[in-house]
View 1 (cartoon, rainbow, N blue to C red):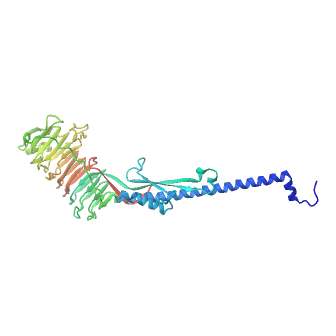
View 2: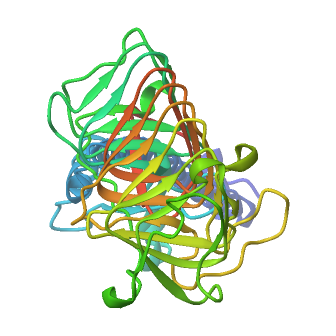
View 3: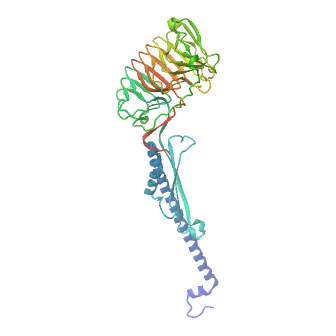
Length: 433
């Protein structure tokens, strides 16, 4: 029954249906407020994640720049600084950001790349009311920046590199490095250079006017990294047992030890002298003083055989490949021209000629000679000269004190695992992921 003077609001409060409406309204209000709070927290987390990605991008590029400048010890500091500039402070007393730098080792991102991951716990505004574990939520992002190319070295020079008169230096699938910091260490005129990289410790050179088929960002002057070849093992021999050069007078000869695992020593060795025929058996040859000489030989062949050989030049021994000589030599374990593999010579497989650093006698390819060598030439103290149309291919590379190519001389080196890697970086590392 309606009471006199009772308002409609009072009636709603007294009646149960009115109370239910109020509780439902309050509940819906709280739910709506919860959704709003959740949306605010989630939106903040998405915002922080985007900021983390920007910080990771900047950190990765900055670290790659330091790696490219050979300042690897400074990578972490600059990465931290860039993350801080982008809102992720690594020096906070509470909940600091962390920047983790790694080198990618999978997929396309191997070699000269830096991966930066930025992470920091982010304070939530409302989610913590539901669970203490949700009071802070970690956000992180990862970026990868490329700094350039990693080039395996197959021509390693410690002194002067001189090229002139239409000469050619071809590093097939590998790089060229000159360790000398002298301003005159590189002199290239009217010549051609091919390779994946070309670098020198010197800054006083340029390649203007020459044909250089090397990526522009892999040509580096003032490179602080050096090529570091692995030196072979010197064979054991007795000087008193060394044989006087038996081939100097010409004639037909077969040289070499009894088997590929043996060593023989010559006090000089000449092949193909006076139209003679010289056959080289597999094995290790010590040339103790005088010359290792290749003449034109019978039928235009300086030597027959020569598969599975290792020459050790010592006591001032000098190698000369004379004009018109046609030389074919294959190191132990290497693949022969006609197919198959040359006999092993043991620990020095893959090395064709070794002259230790203490020996500074030269290696000369002169007068239109043609030389194929499947194996490395390692002569860190020698001056190597190739001239007058002479051509030499060394499938295994070259290590020398200096290299001079002139009058259409050419040298082709092919990837060698003994000379180390040189990291040549682009001037401006870029973000790649």
